[in-house]
Amino acid sequence: MAVKLKANKREDLHKGTTRSIREAGRIPAVVYGNKKGNKTISVDSIELLKTVRDEGKNAIISLDVEGESVDVMLHDYQIEPLRDELVHADFYIVNMSQEMDVQVAIHLEGEATGSKEGGVLQQPLYELSVRAKPADIPEQITIDISDLNIGDSIMVSDLKEGRNYEILEDENTTIATVTAPDTAEEETTEEEEETEPEIINERSTEEEE
Image (cartoon, rainbow, N blue to C red; front, side, top):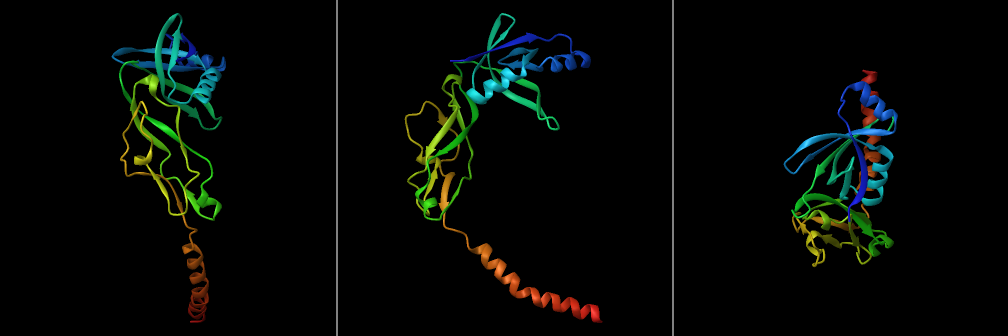
């Protein structure tokens, strides 16, 4: 079910008007896609951030533009880095009956057995590329890692069947793995300590010359 978000039409695109919109707690935005013309709008910045936080970045939003409703997804947004404020958003119009490709966050659940034994949990992949109809796009993909021992890995091919979306990643891609504690760094440090006096002596000799 789509979450609702109200929007106002934005016809005056002058900088002064845009500044006034932001001062009122709203942000300028544009709606486009699905072979429809672009629409310039404004939305409440707090409501948009709350929607993304509660529903996820792939949420289907029923955007009410002064009485006209359209199903969209948040395609892109801009943050002002100094003030860390949302300043602009792009909404993409979706066809609810047509599949689309999106990135979905991976959430690892539980504590790996190997981690309890001193192993190091590594997660090379944080998002999965999937294809699905808009209503079937998951908010996140949760993977239980509790049974992972040292040396074990979870691959894309290990994900369970029965899902209503298609995973586009290579099935041999590693999602998570537990490795043995790495002693290479300690060995390197010891070697540097052994060779350090020789380097100091060489410098001392050059200075004396």
